[in-house]
Length: 329
Image (cartoon, rainbow, N blue to C red):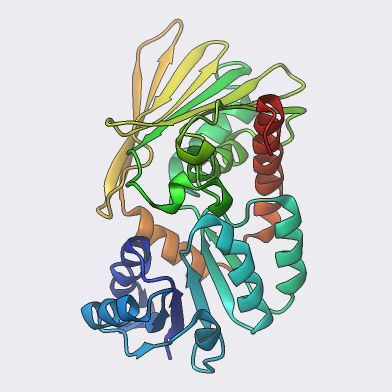
């Protein structure tokens, strides 16, 4: 029997991550059988939920999120609400005995994550970070920890997303809006996978001068006892950007467009430029991020809470630091 998943939120990201990818994931011992089935959906607007269900062939529409959680046929839920609602509904889903997949960020504070961890004693919880565990991360990890090009000096990450549509949650700080919460999970997961998160300092800066005092630009930094530093520069604008640059003592490694807003499979290349050698391209086959993410979750024997704990703690610390510097809450 396939895993029955209920959607908490009738959203575009749910279409890309589950509805389009679920048809691609099949049981290895029964290639014709789907591993998952989308059994129900609920949205803040029941009419929109019904239209969404009709468009995607979802058999059941619940009038509320609570009603979906009470549905005994649902094994797991996928939560794609505004950021400040992730924690609340993840906790309620865990208490209801449902496995939980939550769009990034999993929670907004370390306190929220502690509450979720306490609630999720008998279920698994996963954070949907589409870029996690891409093969390039292991390659760079080896470069860092084996010091193939000498010690790491710095990691610089640049992310730019499109200007959000007016009126949405991304321009409302009380709903967890802002460019930092939109990008921090991608950055911190990459840092965790390549360098580790045992940094000794964490700082954040923003003018918080967007609509309603939201951050439309943000700078974050981590520093290690070795002197190595990782920085994030995030903002909104017309040109989409998602780049990592790793600077070692004897080489620079660049990764362009590590996150593209498409569901199709895309190839990636690491460009290695030694200080005393020829430029090298390390290529990786085209991968569909969302299909890989779903397969990773379905194949996992453990959940994401242990790995997410230091990420959420640092995200909370960096955002709070930026607020303190600006003198706002």
